[in-house]
Image (cartoon, rainbow, N blue to C red; front, side, top):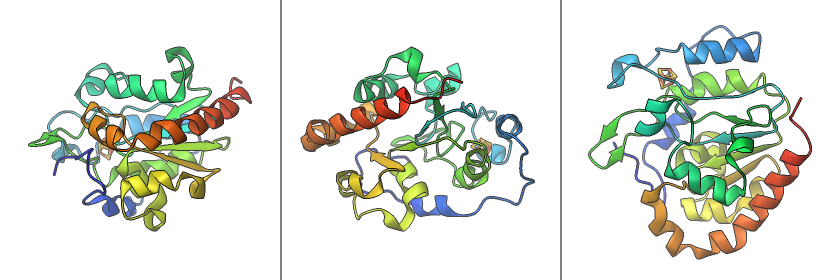
Length: 223
Ligand code: SF4
């Protein structure tokens, strides 16, 4: 099943809320990152060697949860190093240097590895990934104040039944999820039509997103 960025909901997203396998709990963020980066859990289902792409430091205040790396991110190993990342940085009004400062911003997608291509685009993030790694990584990120949920799969995993009936309605209800979560559409070029049809997002939501993001970043995370 391919990801449909224009979809008003997602198919199969609820499966992301399944529990991951019972693995030992990492004792530190360093150990959690090392184990996630060495993960081969769904290797038989991937069309390539697993290459988890994530970054975090214990002092991070903001967590960005996207869907899964695309091919370019898979090849470079740098998250959001593509047109989607360019638009996300524009929404946040942040330069690349700050965006990639893991002491301030952790980046952990719903699926850590590129899932491959389907007939309609990238495949969905592997369902076993987020339940396996997000709780184990989050346990060692005690300073996260704001989680940006970018796209329907991130909404599904973190908001679960609190999501509205459509992606647009979930994003429009952003106030309900604060101060912990800020749900956003995915900034993929495939989603430009959604952004055009929902001009309220850039007019009303982006200014508040920028304000909250800047406030959290300014207050710390450089230690
Ligand atoms: S997608 Fe997630 S679960 Fe699968 S191999 Fe990569 S890190 Fe492991």
